[in-house]
Structures are given as structure tokens and as C-alpha cells.
Length: 360
Image (cartoon, rainbow, N blue to C red; front, side, top):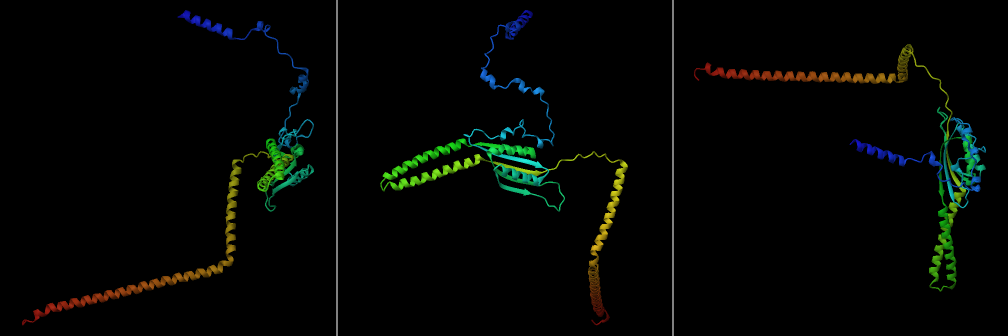
């Protein structure tokens, strides 16, 4: 059994040695590396020394510095996702939605309107919510604005927003309308060819064929106008991007110094002063109620007197009724007793008469 175990261990050791990689002495026999890339390819690649990230200083940005990051400098470009496509053969539609914050609300609104107008855009809708000046409140004004902006100026507009406002949230949607535009163009070409063919057929058609050809020609022209409207809609959306901005009024939070917890005696003094204040407030409330009820005291007094007189009369009336009923009951009982006594006396007389008369 021991020999079998040693044999198995030897086989495993040989298998592990065969599966391991070649040693240093076999490295010289390895095949030569692949040929170096062509000089043209090397020229297109940036040299390694230009991308030495170890030498670049670390940039730490605070929350207050984000809104003023110099993105218009030559070393900082607009966000890549916001850069329109340079391929003019593509029909790309850009829709951008941003939530912005600013401590200066109305100047911020005017800045957006002026910037959009200067870049060749226009405002489609605006909804501005303020607050009542009679009520003290935190800055909470907000505005919703939807702009149409030339796509070629979209990057410049984003740079202005990055430098002027705090971007709270940003969303972009890019739609590729190239296929739909090409389909509309191909359909329009086919319909125009059919239109030319129908016009030629109308010239040589007889009276029986002309109505059908004319109806088809009207339908083809209607479809051509639909394809033209589709192309115009796509072209308008490509040339002018839609930018929706939600602008919120905000303020920079101030540093609040820490407050030490109150001591035991301070808490006792606070509770005592609070109880005294509650008692004084209660007394004041009672006084205010009495003062408020002062004009109604005569009316309430007369009403209370009338109610008291009515209750007193009602009690006396009930007492008289009870006495009358008691007196009537006594009279009836006396009459009943008298009748009973009279009846008993008559019965006694009738029982005595036969005994007094011996003749009977």
C-alpha cells in the first residue's frame, strides 16, 4: 500500500512539472516578437512622455468651486456627450434637460434669456414661480424654461451654463433620425417618379382612363407633401436642439457653531421660567376673554334671569299640581272610607232586627 501511494505522488509530481511554464533557460528559444508597427501608425500615436499622469498635480474641487470651473479654457472642453456630431450626413437630434441652482434668481433668468437670444435661439415656454413677499420664507423661487437653440451653438451654451450656474442634474437624449430621413427621401423620389409617369399617361389617356389616373395623381401628390413635411420636421429638429432648464433659487449654507448642551440648573431654570410663562399666558387669556365678553354681559344677564324665572315658575307649577293631586287623592280616599263605613253600619242593622222582634 505504501509503494502504491509513493507511485501516485511521483506521477502527480511529473504531471505538475510538465504543465508548468518554461524556465529561464527556455526563454531564449522562444519565437521572436511580432514586427513593429509601421511608421505611419507610430506617428498617429501620442508619445508616452506626453501622458505622464504622475507629474500632473492632483485637482481637488469643492462644492462651491464646481459652478466656477473654467471649462471655457483651452485645456477644458464642453462635456463630450454634449458635443454635436461633426458628421453633417447624419441627422442627429439633441434634447438636453438641466436642473440648475443659483443664489441670484432673476439675474440668472435674464442671463439665460440673453444668452439664448445672442446664440440665435428662442424661448418656447416659461413658467416662473415666486413667493409671497408678505410671508417670510427661504429662497425657493423656481422657473421652467424651454428653448430652441441652434445645434452648432449648443456646446457654447453649455460652457456658459457650467461657468455661471451650479449644475444639479443633467440629462441628454440623442436621436439618430438618419434612417427615417433617408426613407422619407427615397419615398419622395419614388413618388415623384410615379407623378411624372402619371402626367405622361394622362396626356395619351382616353376619357375612361383619365378619372382613375387623376385620382391616383392626387393621392401621389398628397403623399409627396407628407414626405416633404416629414423631412422638414426632421431638419428643424436637427438644426435646432431642444433645451429644457429648471432653474432653482438656492443659497450657500452658513457654518453654524456647535452649541453646548444645557446644564442641570439651566434646564431647571428653563422649566421654571416656562411654567411661569404658561401661567401668565393663561391669566392673560382669561382677561382677554372677559374683555371680549364685556359687551355681551347685559344680554347674557337678562337671558340668565329669564331662564331662572322660567325654571322657578316651572318648579312651582309642578309643586301646585302635586299638591292638588295629593288633595284629590285624599278626598277620594275619605269618600271611599265613608261609604265603606256606611255600608258596614247598614249591614249591622239588618243583622240585629230579627233578634229584637220575637214574633218574627
